[in-house]
Each structure stands twice: as C-alpha cells, then as structure tokens.
Length: 236
Image (cartoon, rainbow, N blue to C red; front, side, top):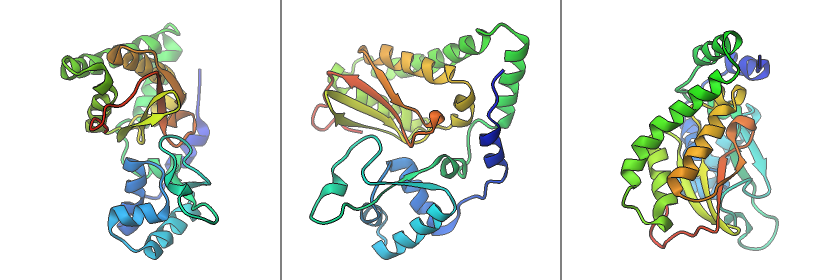
C-alpha cells in the first residue's frame, strides 16, 4: 500500500488564492512558467503590481523561482543584457489552491481497492480510463496530419482542463500540460501517468518520452516527441 501523508497535510491546511493574486496564479497555471514582465503584459497589469502578487504567492509557498524555465519554451528570460529575469512557476501547493477534479475521496477509494484486490487492479483501471479519453480524442484527430497532431492533442487536453501547449524542443516537440486536475491521485498512483503516456503514443503515432510530471513534483508534465516538428500556424 502507498500513502502520501505530506501531500495530504498540505492539502488539509490549504488557503485558497483570491483577488488579483488569483489572476497572476491562474496565468502561471494555464500559461506555464513566466517572468514578471511577461505576466504583466499578458494580464495588462504594471510590472510592479505583478511583482507584489508574486512576492505574496512565493511567501505563501505557492510558487517556485528559477533562473530559466524549468521545462517547455526557453529564451524570453535571456533577452537583453545584465542579470537574467526570474522565472516563476506554480508549485504543487499553488495548484492545490485551485479546485481539483479528483479529491481525497478518489484517493481513498483507490487505496481501499488496491488493498483488497490484485495489485494490477489500479493499473487496469488507469488503462481503462486512458482508453476512454483516447477514443474521444481519436475521433477528433482522425484526419489531422502527423505534424499537426501534437498541437491538436494539446487543444483537446486544454478543453479537458490540462492547460496544454506545444513547443519546439531539442530534437523534437515538447507537449506540456501546465495543470493536472488529477495530480492528487497520480502522485500516489503513477499508473495513471503511465497509462496517459501510452495513450499519447498511440494518438500521435510516434514514440514519446515522459520528461517530467506534476505528480512527481515538477512544475509541468512534459512529454517529448523525438523527431517531430510543428507546422507553422499549428501551435497550441
């Protein structure tokens, strides 16, 4: 049996994000890591106002700060001279401050079933769930050219709450999910992440490599598609 007491304790004493800080946090949730200037531009706020909200969110433990984007597109923070601008990313506690689709009841149910059934039960359930969304997505991707499939998959994932995007990466394409509605479940049961990646491979018709997952503590779920490229105008 697997338990995640640290995540549960953090979830139980969580304070919801509200007001203007919520706008800043949601920008990071849906758009991924960014500098204060990038956030200010996207939200039509002053950089000074954005930095005040970022400082408050960081003090609350809702953000992580990097010298460059931890995953996904890089480059914006390197423009100009002098010291690189800080890149902010939403931490696990920040994501938990938004409503989750799967809560402690789901985790408790899976624990109960895993403790009383064959150890393959959870994996079988995860695969069944992945097959269900794969069937829905396959219909929407049936006539999509191979080079446009990563962007189309990102659009479908975003519609399901995963705030996904694609970008050119070293030697291929990176499919990034900036939010995971079921991270609380996947943290304890990685079978869901494994089943999702297998479904991505089938939907894209290409080999995929999972670089990072929110469930394992990263800021973004990143899936690398080696050798792939993005047709101009097909980004998501």
